[in-house]
Image (cartoon, rainbow, N blue to C red; front, top):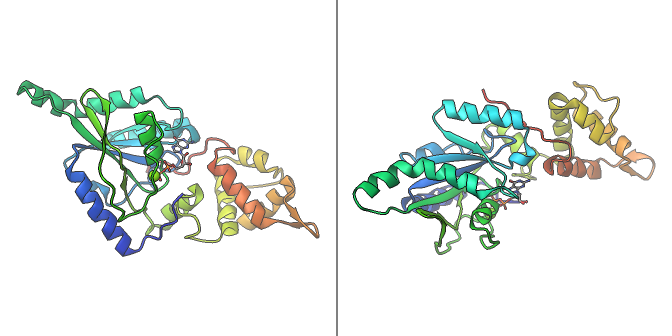
Amino acid sequence: MSDINWYPGHMAKSRRLLAGQLKAVDAVVELCDARAPFSTRNPDLRALCRGKAHVLVLNKADLANEGETNKWISHYGELGLFALPFRSIGGKKKAILTQISKLTADKVDRLQQRGVNKTVRLMVIGIPNVGKSTFINCLRGQNIAKAADRPGVTRSHQWVKVGPYLELLDTPGMLWPKLSDQMCARNLAFLGSIRDQIMDSEELAGQLLERLMELAPHAARQRFRMEGAQPGMTGHELLDMACAGRGWIRTGALPDTRRGAALVLDEYRAGKVGRITLEKPQ
Ligand SMILES: Nc1nc2c(ncn2[C@@H]2O[C@H](COP(=O)(O)OP(=O)(O)O)[C@@H](O)[C@H]2O)c(=O)[nH]1
Ligand SMILES: [Mg+2]
């Protein structure tokens, strides 16, 4: 969880840091959240890593709807971006390394023809909370790369060998989230990537319930025991209904909307409402 406020100064610092890191690598592994593969990408990344081999990992695929994830994979494929789903917790690193090796095979082969055994150097990048540290830990198979995301903190670079010709930078590149677009900012808030920045939690939970009633009404009604809930009801009404249904009540038989809001958000984020993807490819 990151609570960085993305002031322009922070963004400039992150950008500088990233430009330095990019110089040292051949390929970029960009992580986004499979539940919102558009909103959780950085708006300026394309320009920053132009020319480099680039693969997009739809991480936390275990929390997203599988059919929707496949649509996103095809969508990015059509745009010429190599994308694949992954879960960094309990995922199989072999599958992803095979894919990454494929992506960089051209470069390796070309150099091998000239007698050079090229080691391809990769770095993982993404906005806060997409799972960069977890992904790196998964690839290295140990729990070492845990580090706080803080722009401007210098750490010495370490290369981790993850394949015969593949090395990974153990420090992820940090990107700033897409906050200028309201819809994206809200999706990021639903996922907990920018908690407390956009609006108060009761309003946010209410909006999430409204969205869930559009995306997966059956699952939402069932999880929050809102039998009478209908699409088109306000977030406020839905949150009250969830509080009543789940017994989140204060003294005086009033709905405990503060506690309810926190629990609605936590349960969605943990996948307890189901595997629900928030956005569809355009
Ligand atoms: N369910 C699930 N959770 C994940 C996955 N990858 C990361 N997480 C969780 O997402 C949160 C943020 O992960 P972290 O690696 O710290 O993100 P970072 O800020 O990008 O380094 C942590 O609670 C992780 O346990 C995944 O593939 N599936
Ligand atoms: Mg991290």
